[in-house]
Image (cartoon, rainbow, N blue to C red):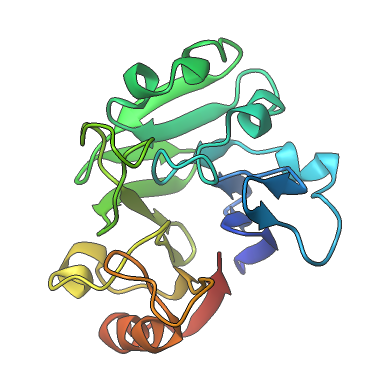
Length: 205
């Protein structure tokens, strides 16, 4: 069964594999601070339907509480360890099944195995807050192995930690000539692809 991937904008994607719908970093807003949706409509209500939702880190454009609040009751939500303590609004989403994870953790969802892998990125909620929750990536293993990188820069053990993958959803973006450490621009994303060697890649973010 082929994997189907829908990119909804920013880092929000639906990955359908083995009849399981996986949603990444849901952002169902036209604008958030300096970020604004340049093309296309806000994702339709069907985009909110998922068996499991993956949150890569605590930045508001990746852990967007108003968007998470729109998810269907009972939806399983994987978040970085410590996220409920760092983001009070997350604790109010009692209709979701929140599961805290860290690099090395694995979760089964239907016929999928979801592996949590490291990311090299500032995972704090606020720029000057304490470092208490890791930034994460996820590898979704079913009929294919799909890597959702969240936000990350290149790191030495990327190929070892992520492992061989068939599809890579890599963040490629920014608003200046240099994004700084912990990010991928187009050149560094190409280097990441060389290390990972997927058959297909989707630029997100």
